[in-house]
Image 1 (cartoon, protein in one colour):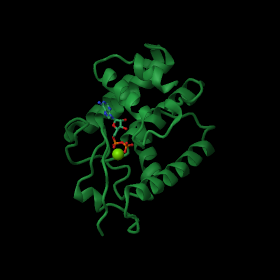
Image 2 (cartoon, protein in one colour):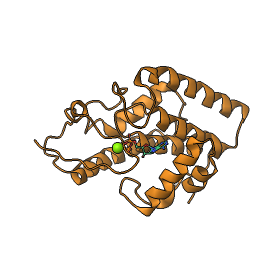
Image 3 (cartoon, helix red, strand yellow):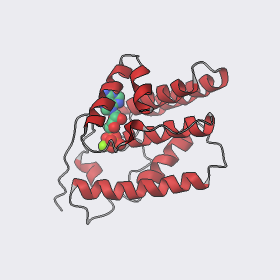
Image 4 (cartoon, helix red, strand yellow):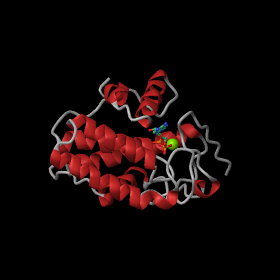
Length: 197
Ligand SMILES: Nc1ncnc2c1ncn2[C@@H]1O[C@H](COP(=O)(O)OP(=O)(O)O)[C@@H](O)[C@H]1O
Ligand SMILES: [Mg+2]
């Protein structure tokens, strides 16, 4: 079928087996793929709005369910943990245990107010995307998770993430990747600033 995808800096390329998981066989370009994924993500956002009366729980179950809601119309492996190594992300065999540790740590931070609310959301987001649970979509998924934490756990406004789509190669995306690299070194202030820019 010849689907040609172009990869930017800071993206995880898909391997052939994952590409086989494409549910919509009429997709032939990166742009079409981005559009279908965005439509699917919009459906997930509607679902989240509809259930916004329920306070989200930071749990493995919810994290998996959200990924499935965001990408399940496009990819067969939505909501399933990665089983291959990727350029970003930990050894895939450690995903389940690292995700559990992250969930436990984050709930502890919330309960004990270990950091300011926004810092909790950003630390969570960065560790989540660094684990890289899924074959793809981890960046978009982690940003929505961070939005949900500030909004629903702390009652603050959602983040703006530079106000532009970070899916395209842009100046905003460069700033975002710079901030992520700072966070890789344990400095979260740039990512917190970017999230509110
Ligand atoms: N150095 C880094 N440290 C942490 N996260 C990173 C780094 N570089 C890129 N990322 C994250 O990985 C994401 C790419 O992973 P991917 O699964 O392709 O997500 P998506 O398809 O939503 O862009 C980027 O959007 C970014 O959030
Ligand atoms: Mg990607």
